Image 1 (cartoon, rainbow, N blue to C red):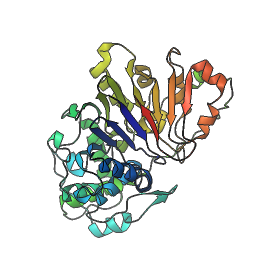
Image 2: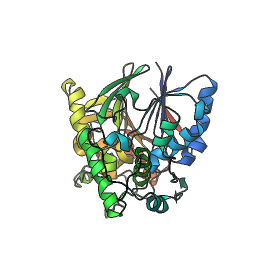
Image 3: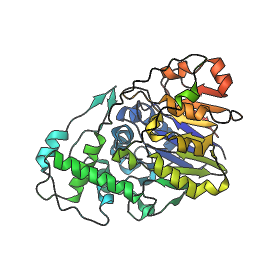
Image 4: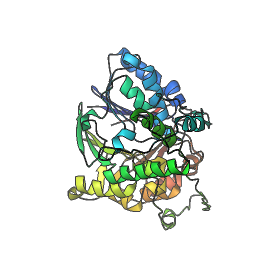
Length: 390
């Protein structure tokens, strides 16, 4: 069966459309303009051919992943754009299966504080109005939301293998511990901003939770490394740089998984933490020998070294690696991540797919470097989706 993976321009975010036979899976939606400029036309074309979305995965609550999905659901009442069978999205209610929070929020204060439309690098993010969160819209339009998990959180502690159409999805993250970390972070943010006060509905909590987390700002990297790009660049020297793991609770809650269709295995890592992914990969596939080969790997967190540890990159291998980022704000991907990939056994040719023509693509396009380390750089000349066929 032919498998097509469309890597859609999403600025500093993620948006992927996987099609195989009658199975169509959308992973994240980038920003609102990712949806309007690129994703919506693709979905309308699919719908015109009587196709639907078998599954929509919202990996976690972050504006660069969720905003385009929220716009899709806003416009998709009664399947106006395309029918959607299942949606995975962990909202506030899914963190409360064992404990109901009785602390609450000043409704007027929080919405005065967070009601805004944010523009960043031309990225249109969600704006806050009560009842306009993704969670509230999924309830309003009665989607099959986390139904394969019986309405609970998408979590490896509840269920780690799901069949979707002609595909099998083996979850790698999050687990309950990562979701509890997100809940603690949320509580801390409420206390810090003085929002805890009087009772409100669960639906309000979903809205407040989603809008505050979507606007959570990643700490800017202070990168003092000055890499000189030339034919003599020493990737092994770069690998000596220390690994500092990501500690963001939002990223830690990210849904990541192995997608299996026919005999193909694809690894989609969202923005997940590498420690949990490492342990789950070993449970799933470690007995079959290392490194574990995948037909495609979508690197975690746009290629950030903090989310792609040396241990993880030693554990996995592939001919095809995806980096989704326009390189702005946080200068993703990190050269350390690429160094650990490119210094693997050179008997395998590795293709690095970028959805933007980043400066690092030009820097690594030296014929001498490509020959020495046996790799190829693939990126679009203009802003448009690129496609991988397996």
